[in-house]
Image (tube, rainbow, N blue to C red; front, side, top):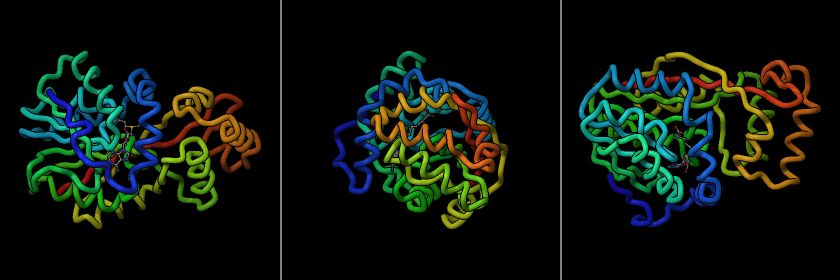
Length: 260
Ligand SMILES: C[S@@+](CC[C@H](N)C(=O)[O-])C[C@H]1O[C@@H](n2cnc3c(N)ncnc32)[C@H](O)[C@@H]1O
């Protein structure tokens, strides 16, 4: 296992992501939302079932998905824009006894991986941060071999425009590197434009404790207060859609398959 962190020049457009995740990397090692979950079990089952020699995990963060999928493949690569996340990932992989994974610092929209080299690509809870999600999915389609499988796990927004605005504004207040929770149709369209055929596998709910969620992102006090105010004064449609309580709320996440 090695880390390519620092070897690559920073890529323009991803600085907000690098700034945000650079200062919060440690929190992701223990984050329950990231370290475990049925979606994580499912992504591992799907990747393993498909099988092959090589798996690539895009937006690998500290490597929670990578440490689980790598043992089913001969070689594994985790790609992430943020050096500090990859540095924390070295410890996560070592702790899990993973010895066949390479960590590489790169933008998802410019993957330093040969065309057709991957049997399976995974990406979990990262694509809503991609500045160029369409470009990232084109790259993922390029590095997959014909007959390869892409498993995307990410949050999605409801179809109603005002609920899309509510959740995306809330996420951006909390973390300025948030780009967009697309709708299910929006995520599918982005993957299909890259040439992949899509199937929805399943969806799930992530229940978030508001204060833990704000703390993980180290949201500045004034923005955190605005997040709390919006949750307190949310319209009934948002209270219902996001299961808002005085201390928690929920977002829906999707497992979407793309085939080349
Ligand atoms: C929440 S973390 C990922 C969680 C991880 N996949 C897991 O399963 O625990 C999101 C990651 O996406 C990365 N990221 C965001 N935009 C990116 C981009 N354009 N290219 C590569 N990585 C990106 C961030 O650096 C961050 O480490």
